[in-house]
Length: 276
Image 1: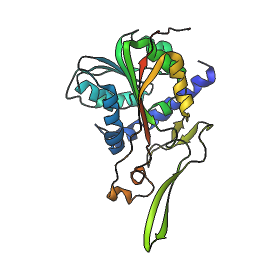
Image 2: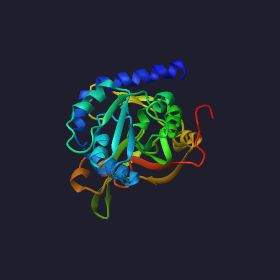
Image 3: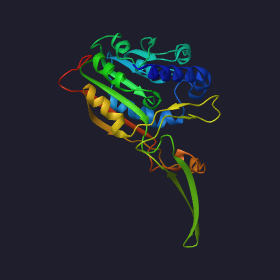
Image 4: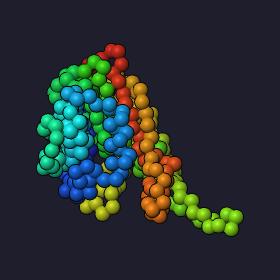
């Protein structure tokens, strides 16, 4: 890893340490509405978890997905580079399943991930974190090394085409055939080349954090190069909700635009190793 990349990783770690308490309060034990309605269902569907499987949850945050997978019968190891987030995750009571094993790991470090166990996991998950990670090459190479033959990698991330560094929410009213009709929209001015940018993940956060925008090609190419192949892709959006649609500057008013991209990847026939 180049020194400037390491510094970026340390900066991002500090950003999340600073707002770990806020994020934990926001998400609670089972996640906020965004997580419960959009993220969790699609991740569980793509994962198709079987009891007894060993799973690695990468960039686990406050442990919502890790605890859920443990409750479903998995043997879960969860890693994050933010000690503050890990402390919040460990503070949550786990009522069902085997205790989650938490470790502080820089997920951009291939060797650190591989040290968790070569070919040791049936599945690896990464839920709503790829856009927060400064480099993906080492992550995907590490994922390939820890997966068992036939293993899968399931991810959910902010949709790079819509929910990235520069979308603008808007609404306009027009008189159509004698009726006032309000149309909600999302304006996106750039997609292919956007630099990392500080932004808020939620209202009233104590500090912003860095978003790393990647168009689809930049998001998926490092995974393909590492030896993964995409075999499922979903784009969940909110169902129409008249009450919530009254909040025009929100995803609730845009049921036709997905804020989340989720997918499942499998190992290709030839497992790659470090240096290949």
